[in-house]
Image 1 (tube, rainbow, N blue to C red):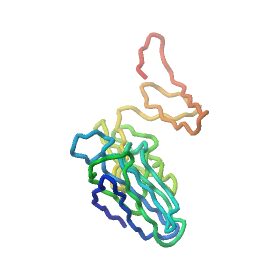
Image 2: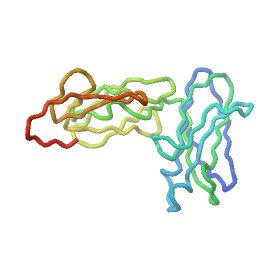
Image 3: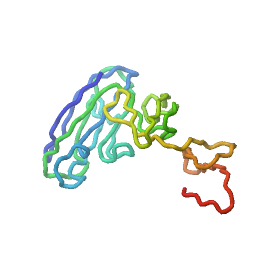
Image 4: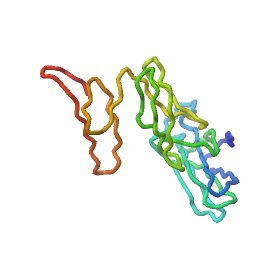
Length: 208
């Protein structure tokens, strides 16, 4: 189930939407404001924030900026109780202008990044989709023959960007990778260090 709400947030306004939720069911929220702006005031003019509140006003989730849509907020959460929640749209920074936005509300999966972030052109690649409230899931996708960017959408209102490359993928392991290659890893903690072993010949020049 999904719906898109078109709204306009006034200079001093806060918009509030009442949303029915089922316990254990995913609630995914995405807001488009900066990405659909048609006036050149600067990004901060369109910088909005999202909060999810329970019936008592207690904050259940919030987002302002993120690595997925930058200044446009995204929330993926699982409802802990049966009933209703309130979705709040407000200015992230003070603005004197009314800002038009589109708020997408659904129960769709909302990954924010894929691992690996691409695959070899013309191959089938298994991707871990990371960031959804119910955890990482796997999708096997046919990588286009043509090199360049392509997208995974699923049922979400916006896509996770992927890349088709002429290079094969290699992952952190004890094996030795043959160049040229695309090296893939995940930094899982502040102290994590990923290492890759590759074969080279004296006098060869490589760009990393």
